[in-house]
Length: 125
Image (cartoon, rainbow, N blue to C red; front, top):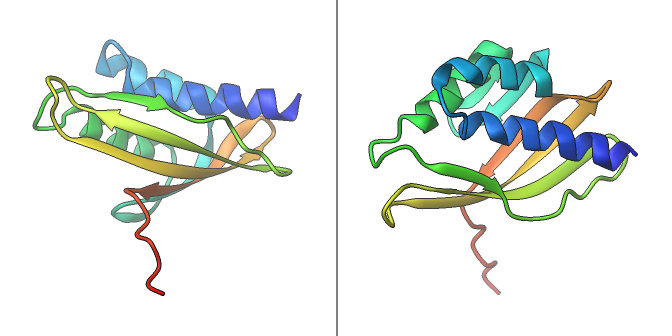
């Protein structure tokens, strides 16, 4: 049951990137995130749904066009932490970015998001 709750919150979070209109982003994020969510993104640490909303809206306004964000793995969840992989693709074969997010859940909502964008380089032997 806990994994299904996490999957639902994660999929709702991802759906904010794919909303049909910017006006739906806040409502979707409010269904997935706590109001005091801590977001560790590519530009550093921020707090609150408004900060996550700014990040999502920036991604939605990608210079190559409105892209699509999808979860491309199962949700792996040991206890209250979960991780999943995602892919963001812009239209017409434009830039593609993949990564892994790690999220923490509190009372069925995501209260921390850590974004790892890009592939991890193989270690040098």
